[in-house]
Image 1: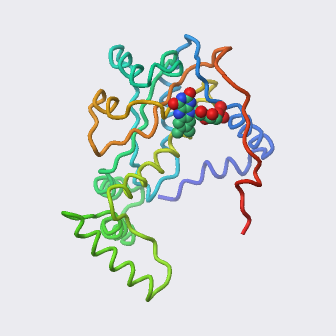
Image 2: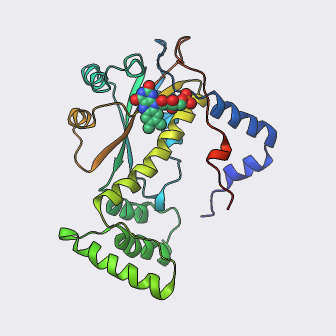
Image 3: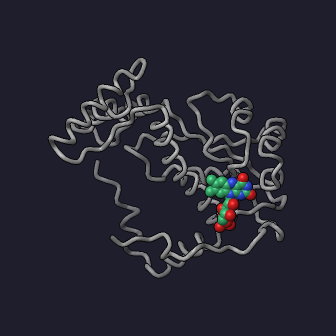
Length: 252
Ligand SMILES: Cc1cc2nc3c(=O)[nH]c(=O)nc-3n(C[C@H](O)[C@H](O)[C@H](O)COP(=O)(O)O)c2cc1C
């Protein structure tokens, strides 16, 4: 099988100005919308937005994310309460919990090898997912593997120079899963915008209560709730502004 360059080729032959304009339109028109109309988001549109969400870049393609679309009326009522009754949740056409998984790296590494598009799976790919990924994440009972990894990393750094730190603690893995999942969340919000809908990311929710409601375990972290729907006329609460680039961008 040859690498899938179809999309790259189509971008290359597209009018670049139009592509950039379309991209800017999507990014610049996205706002955090706190009130939505009654217009539903069609299932096919939401499915496409989720497809685009999952095209987000992610570490080693391990895809440690999940999306819980809360459609059941009773669950939704309780979820809205857990979102502190925010209008962005209350008026949303769809309410989605965007969840990072800390426990899927091993299963997903094996799933990658099973579903790898190029057959036979190259040896270096097998080695990467069987050995390197395991070394990166494995903590062992009472973190015993992490202690050994920490020691080995210090030594290797002194002897060989720069080396990427593996994940030593549960918090390291949680950060890793959260980083990946946040990128997917942003793709999801931009995809909604591109489809003519809007969203509001919410960190203002009771995570333990929401996890109980959705039946999630300690290995699930709700990165954010997203309310989505069609923007109401009074859906935007304030004028968008950001600080000056010079405050944040360092050319070194
Ligand atoms: C992680 C995160 C958590 C947020 N939590 C909330 C929230 O609980 N409620 C809310 O109304 N907006 C929330 N927001 C939206 C921000 O307030 C909003 O993005 C910011 O004010 C900039 O406005 P803009 O998105 O319209 O550009 C959140 C945004 C992010 C990224």
